[in-house]
Image 1: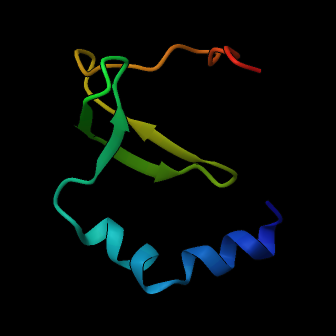
Image 2: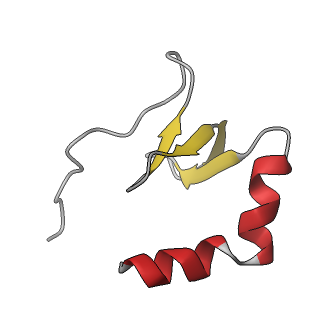
Length: 69
């Protein structure tokens, strides 16, 4: 993503609204097929969006699996 594209995304109404929300949540489908959501915090470090959550929250493996590729 180019810097001008990032600015366009950050200037969208929903992007401006997100920091004002109480608790953003990240939704995903778990290995058992059930949908889940995890409360997250996020910040901009000048070059990337950094997402954080509690130590006991479910985590995705890093690096991500390449199964099926």
